[in-house]
Image 1 (cartoon, rainbow, N blue to C red):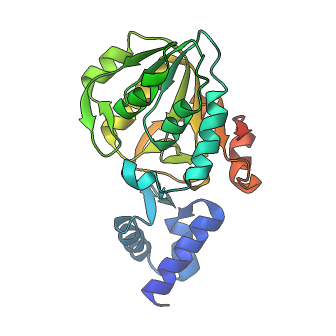
Image 2: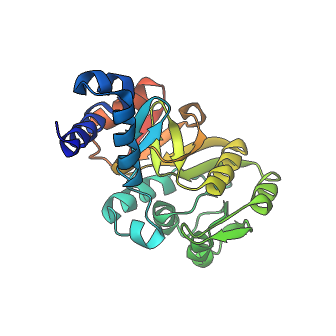
Image 3: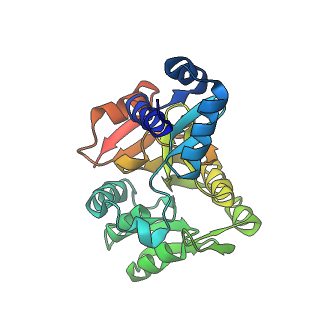
Length: 251
């Protein structure tokens, strides 16, 4: 079997099963585990999968920068943002993450909503400027230009003094076993702090993020109460999360 054929079979198995085990692939292809691990390394270097101990998981295609992500499923993100916006009740304090879906969330807030939005995203903060009855708290820190969010020790310290009712989280990967993940270590630390200081975490996830993983883990799925997905998201993608007790809200 050619290397290219073997790699395609690995990608097919990832798409079908949501993960691959190096030992099993070695037996299936009748090659050494070292050969399989080399294939996985090369596919990971191409951004085709995410290596984990003993095998690999599907890699999230949502790792582009903010401008690139704006071109991925804009209608889906608008629907998810609209549904998430409706979850904020008057008087609540909500953490809103950075990212294109978070921007859609704040664009769909009622103009007369009285609430407090805390964000480490300058882009989200600017979107909220027209909402006169929303108190906007911007968390500072070092600007991570790839995602246009503030990160670092200063951001985590500021968040430690706030308790929110809700946290609307953006991720690049949501996987039943690997949990929640993103593509930058410092961004993962900030998201973890947001989870710890919110009573409820709601994940905003377009279909390409489900059953995928990125390099830096944020938290287990146990930290999540609800995942908001587009209405047409296949049941096969959401069933593993419902089996784990996570509510699925279809936008």
